[in-house]
Amino acid sequence: MRILVTGCAGFIGMHTAQRLVARGDEVVGVDNLNDYYDVKLKVDRLRQLEGKRGFAFAELDLADRLACAELFAKGRFQRVVHLAAQPGVRYSLKNPQAYIDSNLVAFGNVLEGCRQQGVEHLVYASSSSVYGANRKMPFSEHDNVDHPVSLYAATKKANELMAHTYSHLFGLPTTGLRFFTVYGPWGRPDMSPSLFVGAILRGEPIQVFNEGKMRRDFTYIDDIIEGVVRVLDKIPEGQPDFDHAHPDPAASHAPYRIYNIGNHEPVELMSFIETIERAVGRKAEKIFLPMQPGDVEATYADTTLLREAVGFAPATPLAAGIDQFVTWYRAYYRL
Image (cartoon, rainbow, N blue to C red; front, side, top):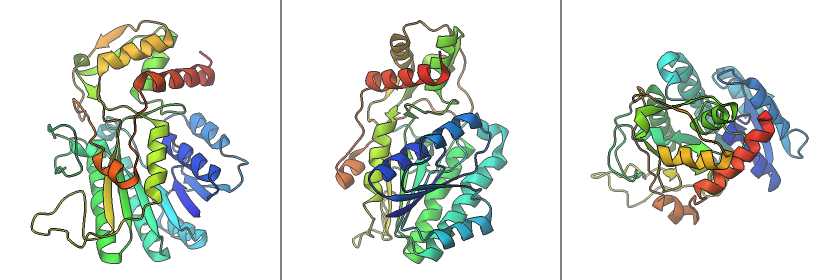
Protein backbone atom coordinates (compact mmCIF):
# COMPACT_ATOMS: atom_id res chain seq x y z
CA MET A 1 0.00 0.00 0.00
CA ARG A 2 0.95 3.65 -0.32
CA ILE A 3 0.98 5.05 3.21
CA LEU A 4 1.64 8.49 4.69
CA VAL A 5 3.44 8.51 8.05
CA THR A 6 3.47 11.92 9.70
CA GLY A 7 6.07 12.70 12.33
CA CYS A 8 8.42 10.17 10.75
CA ALA A 9 11.49 11.73 12.39
CA GLY A 10 9.89 11.15 15.77
CA PHE A 11 10.37 8.17 18.04
CA ILE A 12 7.25 6.19 17.14
CA GLY A 13 7.14 7.57 13.61
CA MET A 14 10.60 6.31 12.66
CA HIS A 15 9.89 2.81 13.94
CA THR A 16 6.50 2.74 12.22
CA ALA A 17 7.98 3.77 8.87
CA GLN A 18 10.71 1.14 9.23
CA ARG A 19 8.19 -1.63 9.86
CA LEU A 20 5.93 -0.63 6.97
CA VAL A 21 8.80 -0.36 4.49
CA ALA A 22 10.18 -3.70 5.66
CA ARG A 23 6.90 -5.43 4.85
CA GLY A 24 6.82 -3.91 1.38
CA ASP A 25 4.65 -0.83 1.68
CA GLU A 26 5.48 2.42 -0.08
CA VAL A 27 5.89 5.05 2.63
CA VAL A 28 5.98 8.82 2.37
CA GLY A 29 7.21 10.34 5.62
CA VAL A 30 6.79 13.97 6.64
CA ASP A 31 8.11 15.93 9.60
CA ASN A 32 8.69 19.61 10.37
CA LEU A 33 11.88 18.85 12.33
CA ASN A 34 11.05 21.39 15.05
CA ASP A 35 13.47 22.06 17.91
CA TYR A 36 11.32 20.94 20.85
CA TYR A 37 14.24 18.61 21.55
CA ASP A 38 17.63 18.02 19.89
CA VAL A 39 17.10 18.10 16.12
CA LYS A 40 20.23 15.95 15.69
CA LEU A 41 18.36 12.98 17.15
CA LYS A 42 15.56 13.49 14.63
CA VAL A 43 18.02 13.73 11.75
CA ASP A 44 19.78 10.58 12.94
CA ARG A 45 16.45 8.77 13.07
CA LEU A 46 15.80 9.81 9.48
CA ARG A 47 19.18 8.37 8.52
CA GLN A 48 17.88 4.97 9.61
CA LEU A 49 15.30 5.32 6.83
CA GLU A 50 17.45 6.91 4.12
CA GLY A 51 18.09 4.75 1.12
CA LYS A 52 15.45 2.20 2.05
CA ARG A 53 13.49 1.11 -0.97
CA GLY A 54 9.95 2.44 -0.84
CA PHE A 55 10.64 5.37 1.49
CA ALA A 56 10.55 9.07 0.61
CA PHE A 57 10.79 12.05 2.98
CA ALA A 58 9.43 15.58 2.82
CA GLU A 59 10.05 18.32 5.39
CA LEU A 60 6.63 19.87 5.93
CA ASP A 61 4.60 21.65 8.60
CA LEU A 62 1.12 20.13 8.58
CA ALA A 63 -0.28 23.29 10.16
CA ASP A 64 0.30 24.91 6.75
CA ARG A 65 -3.10 24.29 5.21
CA LEU A 66 -2.11 24.76 1.57
CA ALA A 67 1.06 22.68 1.87
CA CYS A 68 -0.88 19.88 3.58
CA ALA A 69 -3.60 19.93 0.91
CA GLU A 70 -0.94 19.72 -1.81
CA LEU A 71 0.74 16.81 -0.04
CA PHE A 72 -2.49 14.83 -0.03
CA ALA A 73 -3.45 15.79 -3.58
CA LYS A 74 -0.12 14.60 -4.97
CA GLY A 75 0.38 11.68 -2.59
CA ARG A 76 -2.64 9.53 -3.46
CA PHE A 77 -2.30 7.78 -0.10
CA GLN A 78 -4.41 4.75 0.65
CA ARG A 79 -3.86 4.95 4.39
CA VAL A 80 -2.44 7.47 6.84
CA VAL A 81 -0.65 7.00 10.17
CA HIS A 82 -0.73 10.40 11.85
CA LEU A 83 1.90 10.55 14.59
CA ALA A 84 3.06 14.16 14.22
CA ALA A 85 2.20 16.22 17.30
CA GLN A 86 3.60 18.53 19.92
CA PRO A 87 4.28 16.12 22.80
CA GLY A 88 4.88 16.71 26.48
CA VAL A 89 2.62 17.52 29.40
CA ARG A 90 4.78 20.05 31.26
CA TYR A 91 5.81 21.96 28.13
CA SER A 92 2.13 22.69 27.45
CA LEU A 93 2.16 25.01 30.48
CA LYS A 94 5.00 27.04 28.93
CA ASN A 95 4.07 27.10 25.25
CA PRO A 96 0.36 26.39 24.77
CA GLN A 97 0.29 27.84 21.25
CA ALA A 98 2.54 25.05 20.00
CA TYR A 99 -0.17 22.55 20.97
CA ILE A 100 -2.90 24.56 19.28
CA ASP A 101 -0.94 24.69 16.02
CA SER A 102 0.48 21.16 15.95
CA ASN A 103 -2.26 19.15 17.65
CA LEU A 104 -5.41 20.96 16.56
CA VAL A 105 -4.79 22.96 13.38
CA ALA A 106 -2.51 20.35 11.83
CA PHE A 107 -4.85 17.50 12.75
CA GLY A 108 -7.75 19.35 11.16
CA ASN A 109 -5.71 19.72 7.97
CA VAL A 110 -4.91 15.99 7.98
CA LEU A 111 -8.57 15.08 8.44
CA GLU A 112 -9.55 17.30 5.56
CA GLY A 113 -6.80 15.86 3.36
CA CYS A 114 -8.05 12.35 4.12
CA ARG A 115 -11.63 13.36 3.30
CA GLN A 116 -10.80 15.15 0.06
CA GLN A 117 -8.61 12.32 -1.25
CA GLY A 118 -10.71 9.37 -0.13
CA VAL A 119 -8.19 7.80 2.26
CA GLU A 120 -9.25 4.27 3.27
CA HIS A 121 -8.20 4.50 6.93
CA LEU A 122 -6.70 7.15 9.22
CA VAL A 123 -4.88 5.86 12.30
CA TYR A 124 -3.77 8.62 14.67
CA ALA A 125 -1.96 8.96 17.97
CA SER A 126 -4.03 9.80 21.01
CA SER A 127 -2.63 9.42 24.51
CA SER A 128 -3.23 7.87 27.91
CA SER A 129 -3.21 11.48 29.11
CA VAL A 130 -6.85 11.81 28.04
CA TYR A 131 -7.86 9.84 31.16
CA GLY A 132 -6.80 12.88 33.17
CA ALA A 133 -8.40 12.98 36.60
CA ASN A 134 -9.86 9.47 36.30
CA ARG A 135 -9.17 7.25 39.31
CA LYS A 136 -10.84 4.01 38.18
CA MET A 137 -8.17 1.46 37.24
CA PRO A 138 -7.35 0.06 34.78
CA PHE A 139 -8.21 2.80 32.30
CA SER A 140 -10.81 1.52 29.87
CA GLU A 141 -11.92 2.93 26.53
CA HIS A 142 -15.46 2.59 27.85
CA ASP A 143 -14.70 5.23 30.52
CA ASN A 144 -15.65 8.87 30.21
CA VAL A 145 -12.62 11.12 29.56
CA ASP A 146 -14.03 14.61 30.01
CA HIS A 147 -11.65 15.81 32.72
CA PRO A 148 -8.16 16.38 31.23
CA VAL A 149 -5.54 17.92 33.53
CA SER A 150 -3.21 19.37 30.87
CA LEU A 151 -3.63 21.20 27.58
CA TYR A 152 -1.76 18.36 25.87
CA ALA A 153 -4.39 15.91 27.10
CA ALA A 154 -7.18 18.26 26.03
CA THR A 155 -5.80 18.46 22.48
CA LYS A 156 -5.65 14.66 22.25
CA LYS A 157 -9.23 14.37 23.47
CA ALA A 158 -10.14 17.00 20.88
CA ASN A 159 -8.47 14.89 18.19
CA GLU A 160 -10.73 11.97 19.08
CA LEU A 161 -13.81 14.19 18.84
CA MET A 162 -12.69 15.71 15.54
CA ALA A 163 -12.02 12.26 14.11
CA HIS A 164 -15.44 11.03 15.18
CA THR A 165 -17.07 13.96 13.45
CA TYR A 166 -15.34 13.12 10.16
CA SER A 167 -16.23 9.45 10.56
CA HIS A 168 -19.88 10.40 11.15
CA LEU A 169 -20.27 13.11 8.52
CA PHE A 170 -18.06 11.79 5.73
CA GLY A 171 -17.70 8.08 6.42
CA LEU A 172 -13.93 8.41 6.93
CA PRO A 173 -12.73 5.33 8.87
CA THR A 174 -10.62 6.53 11.81
CA THR A 175 -8.87 4.75 14.68
CA GLY A 176 -7.32 6.54 17.65
CA LEU A 177 -4.56 4.88 19.67
CA ARG A 178 -4.04 5.86 23.28
CA PHE A 179 -0.33 5.20 23.85
CA PHE A 180 0.90 4.52 27.39
CA THR A 181 4.43 5.80 28.27
CA VAL A 182 6.42 4.48 25.32
CA TYR A 183 10.14 3.72 25.75
CA GLY A 184 12.93 1.98 23.87
CA PRO A 185 15.82 2.63 21.45
CA TRP A 186 15.68 6.06 19.77
CA GLY A 187 13.36 7.28 22.54
CA ARG A 188 12.61 10.92 23.25
CA PRO A 189 15.25 12.67 25.41
CA ASP A 190 12.61 14.57 27.40
CA MET A 191 11.01 11.42 28.84
CA SER A 192 11.97 9.76 32.11
CA PRO A 193 13.83 6.72 30.68
CA SER A 194 16.29 8.97 28.81
CA LEU A 195 16.51 11.52 31.60
CA PHE A 196 17.21 8.86 34.23
CA VAL A 197 19.67 6.76 32.20
CA GLY A 198 21.58 9.82 31.01
CA ALA A 199 21.87 11.36 34.46
CA ILE A 200 22.98 8.11 36.11
CA LEU A 201 25.64 7.48 33.44
CA ARG A 202 26.97 11.05 33.86
CA GLY A 203 26.96 10.80 37.65
CA GLU A 204 24.25 13.45 38.00
CA PRO A 205 21.19 13.33 40.30
CA ILE A 206 17.75 12.47 38.96
CA GLN A 207 14.53 14.32 39.79
CA VAL A 208 11.84 12.09 41.25
CA PHE A 209 8.42 13.74 41.25
CA ASN A 210 5.61 13.22 43.75
CA GLU A 211 8.20 11.84 46.17
CA GLY A 212 8.34 8.71 43.98
CA LYS A 213 4.69 7.83 44.60
CA MET A 214 3.75 7.36 40.95
CA ARG A 215 2.93 4.41 38.70
CA ARG A 216 3.28 4.20 34.94
CA ASP A 217 2.27 1.59 32.38
CA PHE A 218 5.59 1.55 30.49
CA THR A 219 5.21 0.12 26.98
CA TYR A 220 8.12 -1.06 24.84
CA ILE A 221 8.40 0.45 21.36
CA ASP A 222 8.27 -2.88 19.47
CA ASP A 223 4.91 -3.65 21.09
CA ILE A 224 3.60 -0.22 20.17
CA ILE A 225 4.58 -0.67 16.52
CA GLU A 226 3.05 -4.14 16.35
CA GLY A 227 -0.20 -2.66 17.60
CA VAL A 228 -0.08 0.28 15.19
CA VAL A 229 0.48 -1.93 12.14
CA ARG A 230 -2.18 -4.46 13.09
CA VAL A 231 -4.72 -1.71 13.71
CA LEU A 232 -3.82 -0.01 10.42
CA ASP A 233 -4.82 -3.20 8.61
CA LYS A 234 -8.18 -3.39 10.40
CA ILE A 235 -10.50 -0.79 8.92
CA PRO A 236 -13.28 0.01 11.41
CA GLU A 237 -16.95 -0.28 10.58
CA GLY A 238 -19.93 1.31 12.27
CA GLN A 239 -21.85 -0.73 14.82
CA PRO A 240 -25.44 -1.20 13.59
CA ASP A 241 -26.58 -2.01 17.14
CA PHE A 242 -24.95 1.09 18.67
CA ASP A 243 -27.10 2.26 21.59
CA HIS A 244 -27.70 5.99 21.16
CA ALA A 245 -29.58 6.13 24.46
CA HIS A 246 -26.51 4.82 26.32
CA PRO A 247 -23.56 5.66 24.05
CA ASP A 248 -20.30 3.77 24.57
CA PRO A 249 -17.27 6.11 24.27
CA ALA A 250 -15.24 3.23 22.79
CA ALA A 251 -17.48 2.66 19.78
CA SER A 252 -19.87 4.38 17.40
CA HIS A 253 -22.49 4.03 14.71
CA ALA A 254 -19.75 5.60 12.51
CA PRO A 255 -16.56 3.82 11.31
CA TYR A 256 -14.63 4.96 14.38
CA ARG A 257 -12.65 3.14 17.07
CA ILE A 258 -10.41 3.94 20.04
CA TYR A 259 -7.87 1.51 21.53
CA ASN A 260 -5.47 1.59 24.46
CA ILE A 261 -1.97 0.38 23.68
CA GLY A 262 -0.21 -0.27 26.97
CA ASN A 263 1.56 -3.06 28.80
CA HIS A 264 -1.35 -3.67 31.23
CA GLU A 265 1.21 -3.80 34.06
CA PRO A 266 1.80 -0.51 35.88
CA VAL A 267 5.16 -0.15 37.62
CA GLU A 268 5.95 1.88 40.73
CA LEU A 269 8.34 4.71 39.87
CA MET A 270 10.90 3.57 42.44
CA SER A 271 10.83 0.04 40.99
CA PHE A 272 11.32 1.54 37.53
CA ILE A 273 14.38 3.43 38.76
CA GLU A 274 15.76 0.25 40.36
CA THR A 275 15.35 -1.57 37.03
CA ILE A 276 17.36 1.15 35.32
CA GLU A 277 20.01 1.06 38.06
CA ARG A 278 20.48 -2.69 37.52
CA ALA A 279 20.74 -2.27 33.74
CA VAL A 280 23.22 0.60 34.04
CA GLY A 281 25.17 -0.95 36.90
CA ARG A 282 25.08 2.18 39.06
CA LYS A 283 22.90 3.65 41.78
CA ALA A 284 21.08 6.93 41.18
CA GLU A 285 21.34 9.97 43.38
CA LYS A 286 17.73 11.06 43.84
CA ILE A 287 16.20 14.48 44.41
CA PHE A 288 12.61 14.05 45.60
CA LEU A 289 10.20 16.75 44.41
CA PRO A 290 6.45 17.39 44.69
CA MET A 291 3.86 16.51 42.05
CA GLN A 292 4.16 18.63 38.93
CA PRO A 293 1.18 20.50 37.42
CA GLY A 294 -0.48 18.50 34.66
CA ASP A 295 0.89 15.14 35.84
CA VAL A 296 -1.19 12.20 37.03
CA GLU A 297 -0.29 9.75 39.78
CA ALA A 298 -0.92 6.57 37.82
CA THR A 299 -1.65 5.09 34.40
CA TYR A 300 -2.84 1.56 33.76
CA ALA A 301 -4.13 0.31 30.41
CA ASP A 302 -7.01 -2.09 29.94
CA THR A 303 -6.06 -3.74 26.63
CA THR A 304 -9.07 -6.02 26.25
CA LEU A 305 -10.48 -4.23 23.20
CA LEU A 306 -7.14 -4.22 21.38
CA ARG A 307 -6.66 -7.93 22.00
CA GLU A 308 -10.18 -8.71 20.81
CA ALA A 309 -9.80 -6.58 17.68
CA VAL A 310 -6.36 -7.60 16.41
CA GLY A 311 -5.28 -10.57 18.53
CA PHE A 312 -2.40 -8.75 20.17
CA ALA A 313 -1.56 -6.78 23.31
CA PRO A 314 1.83 -5.50 24.53
CA ALA A 315 3.66 -7.79 26.95
CA THR A 316 7.41 -7.07 26.83
CA PRO A 317 8.79 -7.33 30.40
CA LEU A 318 10.17 -4.05 31.71
CA ALA A 319 13.60 -5.47 32.52
CA ALA A 320 14.04 -6.80 28.96
CA GLY A 321 12.95 -3.52 27.40
CA ILE A 322 15.15 -1.40 29.67
CA ASP A 323 18.19 -3.58 28.88
CA GLN A 324 17.64 -2.92 25.16
CA PHE A 325 17.17 0.78 25.77
CA VAL A 326 20.29 1.17 27.93
CA THR A 327 22.39 -0.71 25.36
CA TRP A 328 21.20 1.67 22.64
CA TYR A 329 21.62 4.75 24.84
CA ARG A 330 25.23 3.91 25.71
CA ALA A 331 26.10 3.37 22.06
CA TYR A 332 24.31 6.42 20.68
CA TYR A 333 25.50 8.91 23.32
CA ARG A 334 28.87 7.16 23.79
CA LEU A 335 28.55 6.88 27.56
